Image 1: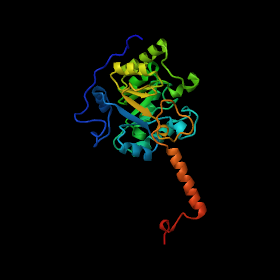
Image 2: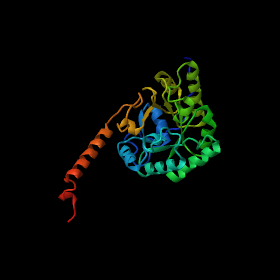
Image 3: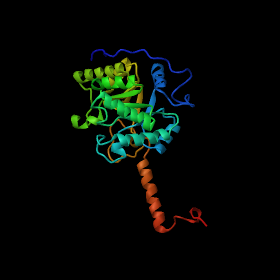
Image 4: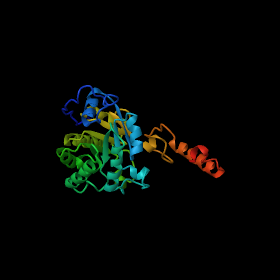
Length: 291
């Protein structure tokens, strides 16, 4: 594989004395903190969140970046893909996550159909997420094809996280969820996409379902943080859908998922015990009743 076409860009230092884990206590994490982490070689974690309660747990745990992903369509709204998710749904979910957090940088997805028509459409809908939901950044899919849109949003003062490689909103065009960037032509296309979003002003880029060696190459030559999901260990950050990592997802999960808990089994057991207590008349007991 030839040398990457990416060239590192100049970035300003974040305020002295701030780190992603433990250092930022009186304000939210910012894109400048992420830029500083990139320069310092500090890795960081990102999780999805779709409600105030779960977001608050992750915020208290110190997760520095939370993504209100359109993956809510799959894991919360009952859709088969992310395609049906609407702007109104994203605004509602994003506002809940913002209300439930104090420290994390909250990034919200622009859903399918909310930005592809024109950069002006993207600006209108990104502004809704900033103004109505209170998020600090937005995410959109696409590399070279989305560069002009990213540039307009950044010029308008809206931080943008890019998303390249496997882009779930294009599931029907891909015919599924295949690994992207395999072979020289596909690899060079992904490298061009990474260069394009960086030059357009994105503050970070998600690399989904790409070969680990290629993701590491993009990371090495990129001045902005790379966020891997199925991109191997060489990226600056890692993101997982919270229902996957916590064991809430039924059935098979993607290869790149590590399950850190089995909440589905825990909740099922709790519901079973509750039903048994009600059926047997042991709940509610005197300690749960008013006199």
